[in-house]
Image (spheres, rainbow, N blue to C red):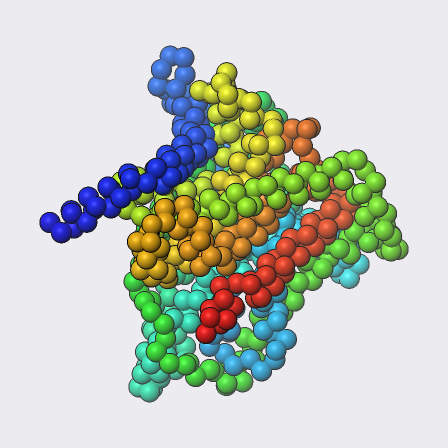
Length: 570
C-alpha cells in the first residue's frame, strides 16, 4: 500500500513538472525516430513486398554463395578473435593484479597499450600489418627476404582485430580480478594447492562470467567491424563488407537490408546474453571490494616468463602504431626509404584534405556536447526518476551498442531517403551534415549513458531533494546540483563522443555525400588504392588530434573535476 502511494506521489510530482514531461516526450521521440524507426524499416524492407509478407528476399540473398560464405567467415573470425582477445586480456590483467613487476616501464607499457585503441582510427593496425608483413613489408621483404607474402584474408583480419580489441578485455578483466577477495585464494594455498591449481579451482570459476562477458563484447565488435576487413580482408568477405558491396556495387538496397537484418539478429542475440545474463551474473559473483591487500607473486619462475610475454606483446602493438607515422615520412614504403614531408604536405595542399579535417572536426565538435548532455539527461531519468517509459528509454538508448555501424547506415538510407519520411520534413536530413551528427550521437550515446548511470548511483538522493524542497524546478536542480556532481562523467562523455565521432567509418561511409568529406573515409579510399603514404599521413594527424583531446580532458578533470572540488571542500 505504501509503495503504491509513493509511486502515485512520484507520478503526481512528475506530471506537475512541465519541463520534465517535455524532456521525456522529446527524448522518446528522438530515440524512436533515430534508433527504432531505421531498424523497423530494415525489417519492413526484408519481409514485406508488394504482394504482402514474404521471405523471398531472404531466400534470394541466402542463395547467394558469397553471402553464405560471408556468414561462415564472420562467425569464424568472431569466435577466434573473441577467444584470443579474452585470453590475452586475461594474461595482461593477471600480470598487473597478481604479479609483482619491479619495472615501472611495464606499467607504462600497459597504460599506453590500453589507451591506443581508444584514440586511434579503427583500421590503423591493418595499415601497419600490410606495411610490416605485406609483399613490400619491412619484416617480410627486408628482414626475412620473403617476397610473396600475403597478409590479406582470414589470418590478417583475425590478428589485426585481436590486437585492436584485447585491450578492451584487459580493462574489463582487471577490475574483476581486483575485486576477488585474496583470502579465498590464500585459504587454498594454505591447504597445499599449487598456484596453478588455485587459479583453476578458485580464481578462474570466479571470473568465468566476466570472461564470458569479455568474449561476447569482443565477438560483437569483431563481427560488426567494417574497416579492418575492408582494408586487409582481400577476397575474404565478411558480413559487414558484403552488405556494403551489395548496396554500393550491386545497387540492391532490399537485398542489403535483408543481409543487415541477419547481421543485426546475430549481434542482438549476443548483446541480450551479454547484457541480461553474463553482466548480471558477473556482478552477483563478485560483489563489493577485496577485504584487504593482495600479496603479489614474487617467484621469478612465474614473474619472469609472464613479464617477458606481456612486454613482447605490448611492444609489438606499440611498434605497429609507430609504423604509421614512419609510413607517412618515407617517399615510397618498401622501396624508397628517404625521409620526406611530401605526404603531410599533400594532406593540406589538397582541397579534399583540408576539407576532410574541417568537416570531421566541426561535425564531431557539434555532436560531442549534445551526446554528453543527452547521456547525462538519460542517466538522470533512469536513476533518479520513476515513470512508466523509463525502461523503454534505457533499453533503446543502449540498443545502439548492439547495432553494427553498417546496419545503422543502411537503416538511415532506407528510412530517410524513402520510407515513411520519404516525402516529409525528415527527408531533408538525408545527405546533410545533420544526419551525420545524429549518427555520431546515436553511436556514442550508450557509452556516455553507462558512465552517467554509474556516477549518479553514487549520489545521495537527499542532496537533490533539499533543492526541490527550496522550490527549485527539475531543470534548475539538474543544471545546478546534479550536473556539477557528475561533471567528470560529462567531460568523459564529451571527449569519448568526440573521439568516437572523428574516428568513425562503418556507420557513415554509406551516408557521406560529396558535400561532406570525412578523414576516415579519405584514409579508407587511399588505403584501398595502395597509397599508404598519404593514408598514413591522414591517420597520424588524426591520432594526434584524438590523443590531444584525451590529454586535455585528463588535465581538466585533474584540476577542475569533482574529486578536486571535494578536496577543496575538505
